[in-house]
Length: 457
Image 1 (cartoon, one colour):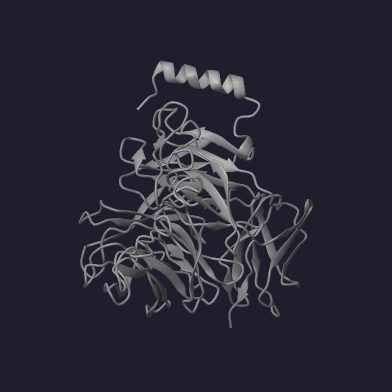
Image 2 (cartoon, helix red, strand yellow):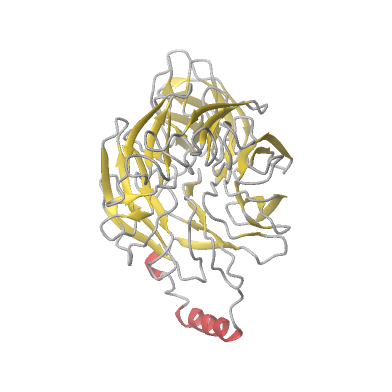
């Protein structure tokens, strides 16, 4: 709904009077695009809405609204120039980058049986449906995008159907051949997985379910690439419950996530869980100044801190927060509606070191969301795809300033490499490489990977 002329006039007056001190609490925050300012724009980005950086250095994601009226896939540059790639319906997933340079996602409905689809989209917008869910043992209604794994296949979940009506976990090849790996079973392992899976440094997949487990309020699970599932933790509806976001693996090897409900103030929390299932609440949001209802997951930036968004509270429109891996919490930004409202998508750290995100509502006029960036104290780096592999495997590097690169090293061992563009190169895991950071020597200096590369046997 557009703001009234009086409201816009008052807002302009406030900005003119306080222009030099506006957002003094978060000088690093800035809106780079107000969604809805142009005809055909994406509108109301919301969970999961995963944002992926492409080989070209731009950022890619989806919205379930806007475009021709039913949703979009779009890209935006780090400075905020936006391009709609295609229009389609019910694309809540966001996108993940594949090793072929294309992006992968899902639609919750649509398809030949109206149970959802998996798709591939090229950076220029060419769209191909890879799989139509039938609503049987293959599952139905995928909410999350499939993720690429080190074996060259993609892995993901569907929310519904399967043998127990609780959804499925699947593997799909780049050509679209889908195999159901696991049918979620409620109390034993979980029910209704909404979030994307992640592949951890041990090669296994980790994820969450919104329901199921001992209290029917969600689980954390581990799954091998062959589909063997282990329950790591059941959420407790008296304390914390209903995780909806993906886990991340921190630099310490532990996993971090959010629950939008529960905690000491019943406003949601941030948690840590070890690979063996030892669970710790890091921080309970207070529902006021901290924020409330963190539906989105976290991002660990190269400064070592965890960054997230709370859907509500703060000034009433949500917050951006950060915390250390030991639980020290602080608010980075309070949204004020004019600069965004209701953030529900996980932040992404671009290889420039800057954080990017979006909000579901708010903005200058249209109340249909914004794209924003947050500059933190972090240097540029390179991102690896995948973060594990065997000697001889080709690994992809995203970054900037890569033209003129003179050396790539895997934990100190030099590798053969090919510079493709200013923002993309490839390198082969060399004989003698061991698990550790990867460095790229460029004319502008040495860039270090934001994650350790794990050499597989």
